[in-house]
Image (cartoon, rainbow, N blue to C red; front, side, top):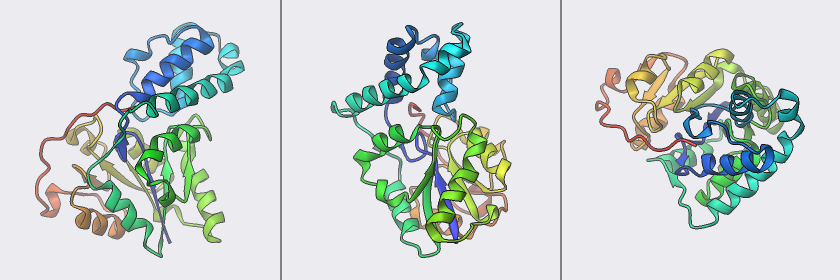
Length: 253
């Protein structure tokens, strides 16, 4: 059995600034300040880490942050639902619908999420795509502030689902940032990087992922590579596959 864990923002989809806008409103309403959120690098961070980093930098005491963290995320979810329900377009990345569908149809695979989004936010972003039923397990920013602590949570949930443990070497973590590669390395999983977020291919290649894609538009190739990779470093240019072309730089939530 294999476990495939996808990041959301920049990997599965782009929500065109919805997450940052919802955070800004939630922080201002809950704590009276959004600090330097507008220039904070959200890429690869868990939602709780974003709140702690931004508010700590703004001088908000830790006990005050902790005391109202639940209220902040309740406000965030309300704001995000309003933004996404007001004609805001969530766009899937190339090939994602077909790739996720093909992986989830395999009897030897479980497809899930490993994301810095809190669970409620993840579900809101994915709801317009129709892909939620494919993700049978997940580990979220609401489970732990440290992204490195999420893979064991996902594995435990997958084990309960299928009735047996899935070895760490049979877990594949797919994301668009160096944080995703680091997360995979920390737990012995296969690290897959895709340059559909704001990190260009050369920066992702420097992290030495096991697989590196420009995008997943070649679904057949991506599916074959993902299901055969056993931890060997492999990139499209070195594989004989067509070289990676220009990569768009969408807004990452």
